[in-house]
Length: 516
Image 1 (cartoon, one colour):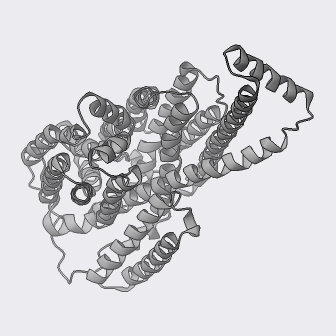
Image 2 (cartoon, rainbow, N blue to C red):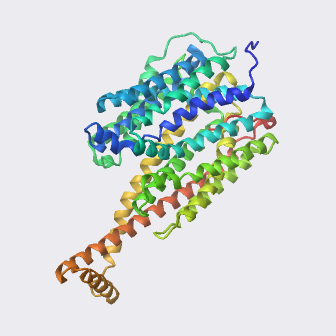
Image 3 (cartoon, rainbow, N blue to C red):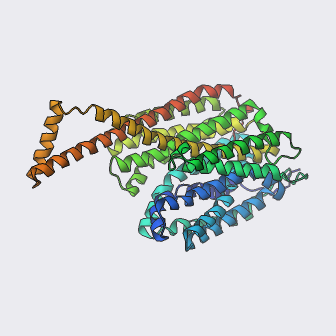
């Protein structure tokens, strides 16, 4: 019998929203501060990227074991410990005197933050009655979609107005509020209790080693020229061996730390696969657009952050609509297909960007993409989690969030690699077309040379500068072609995902669950 006190479910939604928003925001808020962190702590920007990598690695290791930890220690106790650890680690990051100390504190922050999303999701799955869950999860989903978009803008403003340390200090009031509300309003259900048995240390060790190697490989691959680097090759081998051994071990051991049996259900397995691809596409596009705005359209970091935020506006508008449609028993699979095709069309519009694209041409496709995200996040988790029993919900949400994070890491690595390498290919092709005998080319060079001479350059210097301007134009056009190709490929992935939705079963009795 469930003896928990009766708390208004919307208060619980706000409580878990605070902790989740805190963790999701911190995955992106630090990005724009890296150059400032490097300069302040006497390090290179490449060295400073370990501030991001260390967080992601620790986060990824803790994510899949969150369900087991919750069963051993209780969800409420684990949630309070995670938020407390995250908040204290944020304070330590803000006062860190050296880069190694900052990296260490980011490991602590990532390990604490890894438990926040799965626990919050599991709590919400059981708090609301079936007819109200769509609305509640749409509310929660707004924070999940808005936080990574708000992060770069907030991080840039705090860094330029105060210092990079305030990027971490901003977590303190939110964390304290979350701890207080969790103590007051969150209670464990009767079935959350230790299951006994031995601790699966072998499984935990293989999982930690494999996920850490994979996450570092994804994060550092493009920087180290992928498999041209001995370091990346070693990481790939370690990740493959450790993760394959982990899967075999977990399927055979009596008390596994991660219950892979949830993948026997085709709906859950398909949903996790789709969430992995969604992380790939969404975070890939999220990284590409600010780079495009800053490198090709000469936006400042803050301006780029502002003009990438309309995606959050679109999600804010359409998340409640999605929740309302689900509460009225619309088939979540149909809404999911609509969301995927809408997202695909928005990315297709991105692939039409040019060097003359104005801010409002960037604004409206992002509103459309925000609409697509609203119609994806809530229905996808609604369908995926429907067959999962409450006792396994913590385990299922942990794996769900882990695969989204790994998909995001793979997406970011893939699109940055694609843009860099395709730009080289396009540059080579464009240079091959520059025939010195071409009268149009000769006329263009003569015009640039005359313009430079009119500004005071002598004939020889003007000729050299004209060639430099031409080469700069070639580089710019090559980069543009690589960006639009990447956006187009991402749109095709969304289209390919749509038919996979039909593999999943329709939720029973219109039941709806948590977004993200």
